[in-house]
Image 1 (cartoon, rainbow, N blue to C red):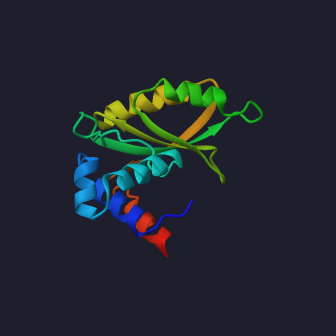
Image 2 (image 1 turned 90 degrees about the vertical axis):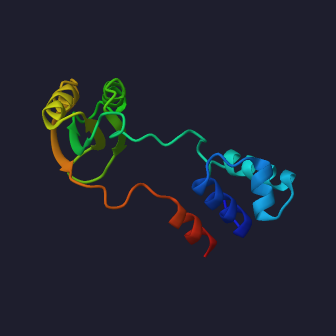
Amino acid sequence: MSIDRLDADLLELLHAEPRVGVLEASRRLGVARGTVQARLNRLERDGVIADMAPTLDAEALGFPVTAFATLEIVQGRGHRAVVEHLVAIPEVLEAHTTTGAGDVLIRVVARTHSDLQRVINQIVDGQNVLRSSTVIALENQIPLRHLPLVRAALA
């Protein structure tokens, strides 16, 4: 999928002001309301816009500790059982299968450092998790971002 300048402008506007309506977006972008709606529909259909859900802040929800854990899992049984186990743990925010020494990289949050131990224990209690290696994030230097990709897609 390729995007043009109008798509990029629309995505930047939605990022800056997620509650802007289609009519207001069309006014600011200088195009017809139908054009904005058609662009939004296409960007959603093509998966560029994954959802319109609010971005939540784990720290504000009472989970200020962020950590990343690399899991080594039992080989030959697939990832399904491990993923099902991880999905049941609310503090596991995301999981990625990886190449290299580990098999799965996860991002977790906890209420405190000692609560992180509880979360890790819960993670390694999965029967297909052999071991984990965890690093605690001290400060988020670059929050998750996608706008630079929008600009790069135009090049």
